[in-house]
Image (cartoon, rainbow, N blue to C red; front, side):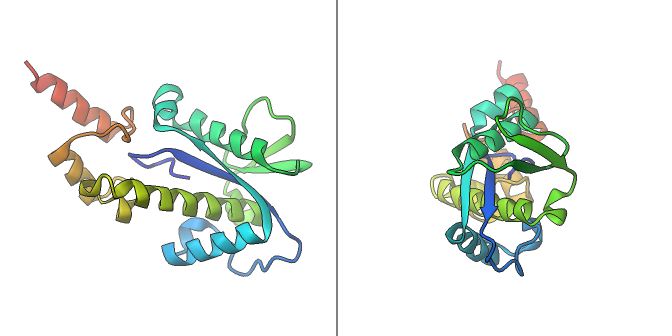
Length: 185
């Protein structure tokens, strides 16, 4: 989660749901409020086998967001305590060189419950990470926008500049850096 953010790492989760889990509230993480997403994530984690993988801002800047997303997925899958027979991945691509079969599904979080569960765990984990990071960088309002390019985040960038937690190849950040370079004598 967090592919479209301007700041922070990208997170992925792998979830193997318990057969008895209540699936009623498990759906696309973007359609669930923050508070409810946190509660559902905790429920999923207590009643499933799960793992979270992360790719850093440095990795995003180096290999691009798509490859960093795939890397975080690979890391999440490799950390699972049990190996599934197949891993369903939300999107067009699957991580390379995996020891398990992977299948990509466009809008997978709307089609397969374990993808939706993984989406909830990844987004909740990333949101909490950004809230914590936002305590050190309050001027960017990451406690509210989680690193996305909201008006208040963009205003913080204009006033206070770019941090090491910003994704330097993302257009708004890149443009700010280019303008700063042009203004320097």
